[in-house]
Length: 548
Image (cartoon, rainbow, N blue to C red):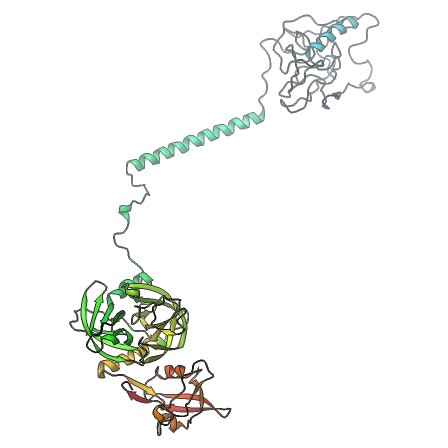
């Protein structure tokens, strides 16, 4: 325990009260008892019953720093805290203090009017002066104190300074809080960063305003003048194919007619379309073909195949530079392949729709609208929107090559396939281009179609278990033509044909559609049932020229 300042007055202001050379008898000693240090104990901080915090052996300021040494003892750090932290420095009794009173005002939560604060401490100081030794210190002008009570003092003292108070003009500078310093540093850094950001933004703005080369703004004038579309897109295919597609208007002598579609087949001006599109103008009617650029040309019928529903017309004065559409191999088409249909649905020329191949080898029997004749096909089925007026137009693959000729639709409520005026429900049918090409070549060369056949008449009931050979043919003739292909293969009336090569056959129209996908002279295998026994036979297809 340090005693170096006992009995010595500090320059300019005592840090401890002056102690006389001798104290009156009966006065309790102000210092610790004499004798070895181990025989006595220094007073410890007392817990304030109001706050639960402990006061140090000396008073503490708001910043938690202990001020001055205790009279007659070691300097003890206070239990002070930051303002509002709840710790109350100086709340406990101060050992060696002349009045023996508690610290009065609470650091960080100044209670100027609290009875435990300043005013009460002042009265207790006077009482202690009358009661014991040593006498109160000399009156010294009061100084501003940290965390003072209601009378400006730090603890319970009246108007004067507390023991250990610094001299006037030599008050220790309060230590800055680390938290305050950190906040100040952060704010300074933020201001610096903000200033830099503002400067950079201003610099960039000035460069943009001056039209500097560093600008990345793309103006409308910088956009490409010509839009280039990648090959294979629908837009690119449509742009390339539309100039080769025509809208056909047919008008019969009796006033009947309609609108359909066709496409350029060769450079000589042949146009491929459906038979039912031009049938009304085939005998003395008017026929015109209009290109996508608006040029219109008169045309004439070269040949028609009612059973195939294929026709070829030719422009009377074909313009130079015609571009035929490329033809694909329809046998290589797969379900799921993309499709593009071009036509004039309901007279709306140059309409492009898209879809996929939703089925292959779909047996379709359709009429020309008059009920005079039917056509049979093993069709490509597509969900591309096809409506009346699309007939005869091309069904393209994703490359823009023709895979079929749009021919028929299934319409809701129509009860069948044909050319009724109902709209598309996503079931459109196209003649495979391989078959249409064969027919077109025949029509261009001879003006009439050639049909392959097996030489037997079958029932036309749909949805059965096969194609049954009829008991007799039309007009009472035998159902199996004598010496014909079927007769040579051993087929008889009543046999039920269930397969054509590997394709299942469920009806007469399905069998005819499969036969017409081939050419006369082709060899095919037929599976049939006779008396409950299944057999197979090879047949060489015959031919029939023209319409019967």
